[in-house]
Length: 192
Image 1 (cartoon, rainbow, N blue to C red):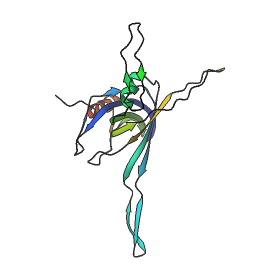
Image 2: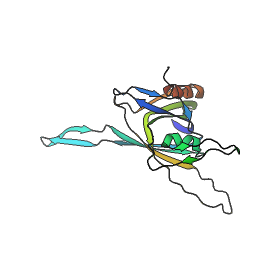
Image 3: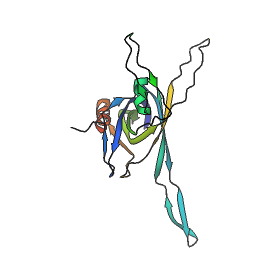
Image 4: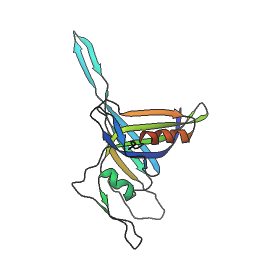
């Protein structure tokens, strides 16, 4: 299996019940995907007894999630980071995003679609993380030189498990539309 593409970053604000049951406020686009890296941290413990290994643990602890997106659109980043955006001005300009030291980023659900090739056939793997919290991205800007050098925004967060232990789900599909529908279905708002 060879991964050959990444598309369709979707998110929704998470509300989690005490038993780990999730509801989200609907699927919203994160913008155009450039990259996604998920670095999993496992618990690593061993117990020796009677001069040999008696128990070991390699269970999930958390995951560092780094997303690269084509545009750091304030209307997308503000709710993910807990910031506010003022209404658009009458002069046609967009609203102003205000960052406050007391802003608290909410937990969100996050999904993506990975294009892969298996034995010469294109497949689409949908990946979903149930509970992710992002932090303020660093800013790295530079002037244009003799040639254009594109820079994109990366945002970093932490994926953790729900109260029931679930942290991620995945499913492979024959079509991209089916994979996108599955991700969006995970983020569907609860019926009123």
